[in-house]
Image 1 (cartoon, rainbow, N blue to C red):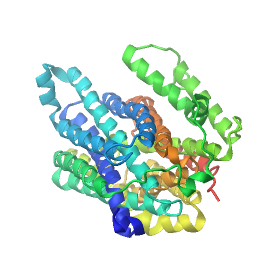
Image 2 (cartoon, rainbow, N blue to C red; image 1 turned 90 degrees about the vertical axis):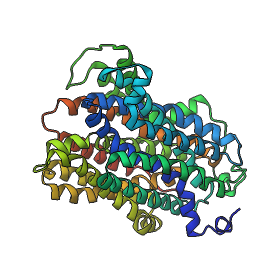
Image 3 (spheres, rainbow, N blue to C red; image 1 turned 90 degrees about the horizontal axis):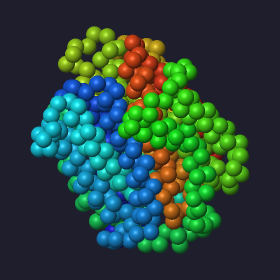
Image 4 (tube, helix red, strand yellow; image 1 turned 45 degrees about the horizontal axis):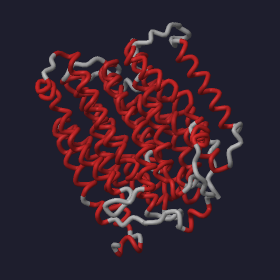
Amino acid sequence: MLEAQKKMKTWFYALLSLPATAMGFGLSVQIAALSWILSDKYGLSIDQIGIVWAAGPLAGIIAQPIVGAVSDKLWFMGGRRRPWVIIGGVLTGLMLLALPNLRIIQQVLGGEGKEGLIPIAVVVALTLDLAINVSFNPTRSLVADCTSKEQRSTGFTWMQTVSGTFGVLAYLISVILKNEVLIYVGSVIAVLFTVLPIFFIEEPRELANEEEATAVKQEKSSIKDMVITILPLAGFLIYGIYFIVDHLFGLGVGGNILGLDYVEVACVIIQVLAILAVLFNITRSNEDNNQFQKILLAHSFTWWGVQTMNVYMLFYVSNVISGLSADSFTSVQSWAFLVRDLIGALLPVLVLNLLAKKSGMAKTHTGSILIMALGYALIYFLGSNIYVFFASLCLVGIGWASLVSLPFAIMSERVDQSKMGLYMGIFNLSVVLPQLVASGKIGEIVNTAADKSIIFAICAVCLTISGVLWFAVKDKK
């Protein structure tokens, strides 16, 4: 073990953050370049791009819980997380290389035309997001494994500071050197930052014997327990299954109630009932499990709003902001994500970690999410002015800084430490299931809406609901 790991020196926190940074950089490349490359280079429409983006959340639903549960038990190559980090990093690098070369892949496979390109784009996007998901879970679990309860908020805020700094670099490359260069740089970083640092980090062999794990009663998780745990995501889960089946087989379900078909209306009702069930603890779960349910619930609405921005902001920039030339749309989008991620990189260690230790992680995160909602609302009402647009993104960046750091530390206090990978995988469902809604129904709404400002109206509403739900989450004493 490195001396720095024994003493938990600052630079070891940075080293511990590099695998997650690689995956974060890959995600930044995906956000910055995927919609652009599919729209500008390959000519796909908004709803077709939404379908491609939906492939990623599908990978997360399947991969994260399975990989998390397996990595909790499997010890291979000197670690439980190490093999998955390496596999995911190499796959991410390869799929990033494939993105600008979809036409070549299509020609090799003998396909032609835009319709023939969509399945290839879906497969590449699916594999890319699968690779990121395979690695993201173990990289975050690695931070939890190698830190004590007292060190955890520091570990995760350092993870976001390092990851966020490279995220800013990603958008700078996008603006200055353009997206294709960014994709190739991303493929190199994905491999180097996962394969090399992981061999200098020593994982604890027995998590269950650590002192902090004794605070949580360890029991075998039954299927019933898992179903109750994911109850907060019931409406999102049913919609996700429906969305997949409908797009594969064309169910043709009728109905039009406020623009929703009958299944979508049922999903809304089920989700409302799930919210009430969790807030009033109808399942009579123990305190830790009920708090974990509340975290899943609040986090899911956050990501519904955030993913709506990630996927469709290019269309807002090109249709709403006044005074832009056709060539500047992509640059403005990259600058927008750069501003958000710059704030997201600076705040965790400099501000949020100190606030979290003073006021509590849950309170700090709740305030940050409500500030993010305010930023989205300002963009909706005044964002056509480019100066207001970028000023509002600074507020959005405050929420982003907290979103990608504190929730992991908050949820890690409420779960069995020996099953951290499994619960990180379940926690990821609160990210990927709302992403399916953003890629599916929200794509239809944005595609048909004359005013693309509706994108940020949806963001503002989702983040406001999330902030209100976070009030129900309590810090563990």
